[in-house]
Amino acid sequence: MNPLITIGITCFNSRDTILRALNSALSQDWENLEIIVVDDFSADDSATIVESAIADQKIVRLIRHEKNTGPGGSRNTILDNAHGEFVVFFDDDDESLPGRVRVQYETLREYENKTDVRLVACYASGVRRYPNGYELEVPAIGSQADIPKGELVADYLLFNDRKDGVFYGAGTPTCSLMARLSTFRALEGFDSSLRRVEDVDFAIRLALAGGHFIGCAQKLFIQYATFDSDKTPIKNLEAELRIVDKNAEYLRRRNRYDYARNWFRIRYYHFSGQRLKFLTALTIFLVRYPVSGTRHLMRSFPGRWAHERSMRAKTDMTR
Image (tube, rainbow, N blue to C red; front, side, top):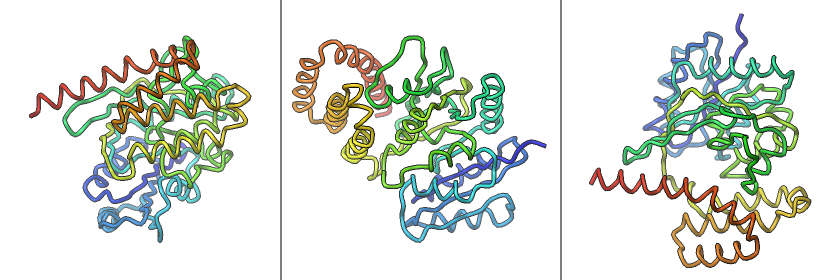
């Protein structure tokens, strides 16, 4: 018999999208499933909508938080209540294709059998769909070329260092992640004090524990981009700087502590539209780190520029 797999869905103020996510979980072609939905003290009627939808669904459990804990706290509740040998996370505003659980499981087990490694995170490729209709392919880390593992992933996430031939894809979003329950528990789950980028923090800890990061090339989910009040540039920066400080000893050993802090600030100035501060900080950064800084910029800028240009073009077309 196939092993039990837990689908974990975090839910917060998602009355307009939660049924899409839940129905995509119920439509999976993997027979041995349990689905856990954690409502993180929503201010709307998300939990009531879920409760009505699952009245006749024995494989689905709804857990209501009595206070808001953030995405990390909700995921930890899922992990604390999961019975599956493997756990896969769905977001409340995304849609997973019917074969997602099966393909990720098969990819993960094939890699385990080939390598005898057990600290493995398996990510799905997908498509990110923006409100203006623009779509961006989201290739999974490790789905092409060499598999990133260990400190290679930590260096990529902390200061964008990339080894030639290794495929880092679209990073490490939890909404596309499957791993063994034992892997999540070995790392003590997610840092619930982080309200943003808790997925990056988890991946860094997994990397520094020697974890391997693999991916499915097949597109298995649609991520609907949203711009909520909890997704502001300043909140991202605050969380990113906390992650830098959590890894200060490692970064100082790599002589990259100040480098990482400065780069996250540059990103913040860009995304918050502070052009003068962005240009000033970037100039200082390139003077201080002429070789690595220029290489970093050339890795980041072309893709970001092309993405933002395509976004603007799509917006202009829809006006």
